[in-house]
Image 1 (cartoon, rainbow over the protein chains, first blue to last red):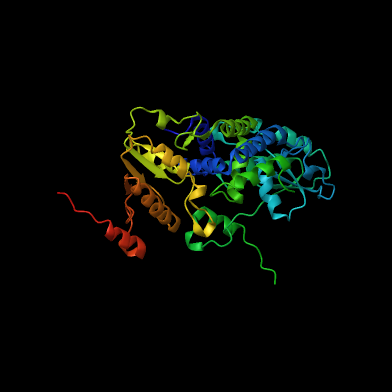
Image 2: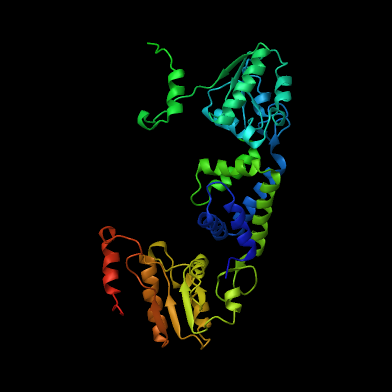
Length: 200
Length: 200
């Protein structure tokens, strides 16, 4: 005997979520059942609602339930700094900090010759259009320190600098709390390159 | 800026699931978003369906999407052995083994004087009614080896034995792969009590 079919379908779907294995998917589904059918139905309708209402900001590509996201609408944001990220979820990581007051642009991916992704598949045209807004003075490339991220940053830097724009890249080096002994060579070499004068 | 409200509602609900923290709830929700709204809506409708269709077996109390579950309906099951468990989810644990061919009865909880749960709140009457089926020859109490489980087992054994029924309890002792050195005293004492002759 297996689980009743409708329950098994839920377990199978939960199991596709990141970090959820067979056992925890079953535990989640059973937990919902134990809470009563209301709990399960509630989560169901929340998901359905979110699926219908959450999309991408027309202007920057971040997640939003409005045509233009709250960051793009926020007049208190610094219009001079634009952070370019690969994915909409990356915006959330920076916003979690609550420190950065500029705006964002989501590329929708990274250039990846190995996976056949070229600049044409990214929102480069939209980015260039966005840059016609002459308030922007600095473009911060916040792309993953991976092969694809490096390739995309290099490509973008070339294009944007040729337009006379100031292009920076977020710092790379040892993560806080880590140990020199366990750092890989590339990280160490980037950390050396990124060294700064200590201000006392 | 926070997540769009409908997305935050999903994250909040996911976070109530067992073993899901703030970060993994957000990761799950974002994963669903990235998969496209279809994936999120799909999970939503599966949950809604399951909430409507999955209930408890009229006969044994296990999860089912029919009035009587597939185990109770299965004529190849041994009618002589009835395993009494506390929760519907316990049935799944035994069925996962695929070795036991008897049937089950779900008590719906354990006697717990500390939490004010007495025999009246459990399905004792339903169990006794089920035992009018004279095919049942052995009742296996498969209750947690906790204080409440022990109390319930002792109470049930007294009642059922007074009816002239054979009552057994699942074995208690060291779990497979564990280490004597780290076993608690009660487990060790149960393991000693439960010792068996090695058949060679």
